[in-house]
Image (cartoon, rainbow, N blue to C red):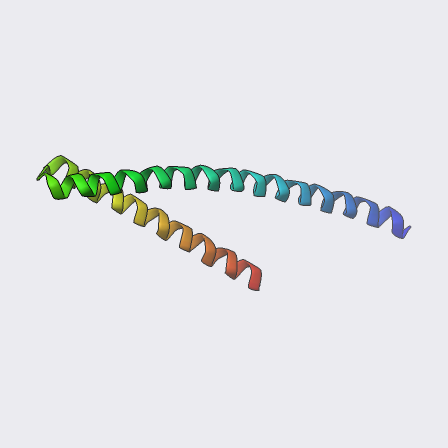
Length: 91
């Protein structure tokens, strides 16, 4: 009798674990893509910063400013994610 009750529960837990594993793999791939994009943005900002100092180009200044803002927003989102993750582990 107990086996009849435990069997479906084990099956559901396995499904949940597999679902979580798939999510983690997807998040890992997304994090790698984000890391790659941030590396490109960092390279852009370094080059644009040098160009901005050498030439007074308004378009470059705006582009650098907006790119930096986007990076700061991404950093804030990542901090928020880690905070949410820490809170969910505490509970």
